[in-house]
Structure formats: C-alpha cells, structure tokens
Length: 491
Image (cartoon, rainbow, N blue to C red; front, side):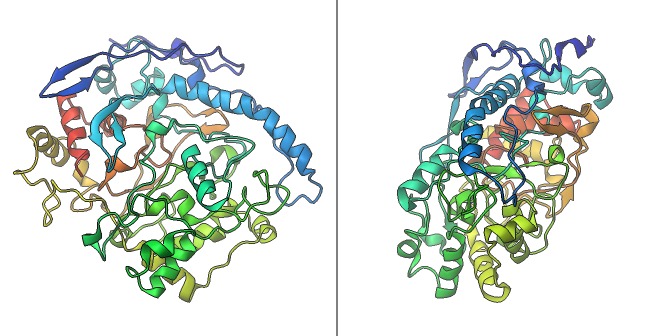
C-alpha cells in the first residue's frame, strides 16, 4: 500500500534550489464558518527540509578571548547573515506552509488564530495513510513529516537569544534598548506568534481584567500601571522582572552580538507581560552544540498551580527557576563567560522571593465557556462541535491522561519517544534525535501562545493535533480532529 519514499528525501550537503512560491488552498462552507482544505496543497521538494549545508557564517573565537577585534568580527558576521537566514528560510518553507491564513477565532484583542495543518507531507501521502503505518514503517520509509522533526535555531551553530521584530521595535521605542542582533534575526513569520503585547491577568485582582492596558510592560511604565494594585514587595519583584541584566549576546563586552554595548535583557523581554512573544534560544544544558535543544519561550501564566519549571530540567520551585535563568540560562551555562560579562547574582531571600511572588500572581486568560468548578465545558455555552471535541479529548484521543482539568496539566514529565519515527540526521546544525522527557505544559489559554511543543516546531493547533495523534498512535477521523481543535480553542 505504501511505496518506499526514501527517494523523496534528498539529504544533499550542497545548497538546494530556491523553493517555489507557496500555493493557496481551497475552502468550503459549513456550519456558518470557513474550513480550510489542505489535502490539495501542492507539494514542494523536500531536499531543503533536511538541509545539511556547512555553517555559512563561521563563528569568532569563544567568549572570553581577550584578542577579539569587535569591528572585524561584526563586519564578518554581518556579511554572513544573508546566507544564514537564507538557509533557515529554505528549510522552513520546505517543512511548512508559511502563508497567512487566519481563522475567525481571536486571541484576546485583534489577532486571529492561524488554522489548518501547516506541516507538509511527503508527496502522495495523506494524514490518514500515515496514521495507518507503524512507527517502524514510517521510520524505514522516511515518511515522518519534516515539520515534526526537532526545529533548529535560526543559526544553530551560533545559538543565543533571538527576538521577533515586533519586540525589538517596541522595546526600543519605550526604553531605547536595542535587542537587534547583527549576526542573525528571528525566523518564524509574525502571524504564527502570540498577540503582542499580550494581556496580563492577576489571580489577586481578576476584577481588573487586563492590567497591562494594552501596553508592553517595561521599566518605563510598570510603576504607573501597578501602583495601587501591588504591594511594595511585589512591585519590587516586578521591577526586577523588567530590569535588564547582562546576557551572553547582549552585554558590555566585545564578544557581544549587539551593535552598541548593551545593558542586557530582562525576564519580560522574552516573557512579555508575563506571557510569551515567541522569542527563542538554546537550552544551556546539552553539549555538543549540535545536540542542544531550541527553546520556545513558555508563558508564565498559571505558575501558582504548576509544580515543575523548565521544559526538561524539572526544577521544583519558581524560586529555583528564577535564579537559574539569570545565573545559567542567560549565559548558556558558561560560568566563566557569565563572570566576565557581569552576571546578576540575585539574593535569594528578597530579590528571588519577590520575583517569584509576582510570577505566581500571573493568571490564565479568561475562558468563559468553562465551568469554574470542573474546568470542563458549560454545555449551555458551548457549541455542538466544541462538546464533541471535549468528548474526543477525554475519550478516544486520551489527551486527558496527561492534561487533566481544571488546568489541563498533570504536573509531571513524559517522554514521547518521537525518535521511533525517524532516523537521526543533522539539519541546519541541529542533530535531530531523541528529545527525552519533557514537562507537560498546561493547555489553559493554549490558543494565545503559538507556536507549540517545547521548540516551536508545531505552528498551529491543527499541527499539534496531527502530531500527537500520530505519535501516540491514536487514530482520529478528520471530523474528530476538527472537533478537538475547536475544544482546544476555548480552553
């Protein structure tokens, strides 16, 4: 039934030709809303999906080298930037349909959720046919969709924090700080990222609604926004969360990646308004460089009900996580570089405690269709499609085994063994191999925080449903998948 597909995947080391223009998809009307059809989407060559070109922009000496010529280094890395970003773009376009296809579902204010599976399938393959294969067959026939492989950093060999342009622009407008890197830029299109600035809700003052008032919270406005709402202790915690401190790529030394010497980054530069903006970097734990994981910034919402922190570290308290981030993650786990660049050693009894206190006030967005007592749908408010999706979630889909209500997390870790489905290979400097145990993140408010999975490889909720249905070997019909997405959108 399934012809071998090894000839479809060309793992060439040379540069592949530019990808053809993305094609549109049809639509059909039903139940008063438009559903996107993806089955007739033309296929693109998959060679670029597994690019393994040499690093087009060789890196300068390691941090700490006292003989760096900053001007020469900057000129060399700027010269190499177009090749770096072209390599990443070709890989992304071969993996995904990157077009802007919004649904009619809003996040909170005015940004619409993207709909439809965006992961491209091998030519001739369908989701139904793929679901009928065993993990061993998928692996041997190289049929695992390229978009389900681990996602490389925009420049995996270099790594480091990278911010979306919308974050760079607003931070610079408010504070004068420039989070631009001269050697690379963020890679995913903005329409796949969370609404910006995101709303902020407090468990202590739910009556106020969005306390950010539609603004990006920075050191310039936090006091005006929160005085009279927070105690002085918690105001101080928020002050520290918006205060920039030295980081590996943004600092005052001559091996930085900012044009001008930088005061650094703040916690809220990645976790905008206590949520996320999609900023990415590499996990500081693994070595060698090719084995490090890309990290998609998770939201800080609902930390008061979570018991594990960090996607794979399983730190046991918010305080541990807060302290680790500035001592370790900011500097890629390099203590010598951290010392040179001016690591901010937080005082546990006051600074760490105050920061943790505020973080535990950050609430999930409202979900008016959920029953407050059970966390499940209120049948008087939900649509038939959403109720069917809830049945799939708690029944055939087995989603609730890891994501039980009311917050839709089991506060533990699971190893999905995704490596069963593919053969390890190097892709744009990232070794695609086993992920290992990963924290079960809450699904409350999930529509507000794309992309999904710990490295952002799943661009839409439709992609997430296809991925987990395949990996867990749960065979869902197309209608069941649509209903399940409808349920996830109201959590």
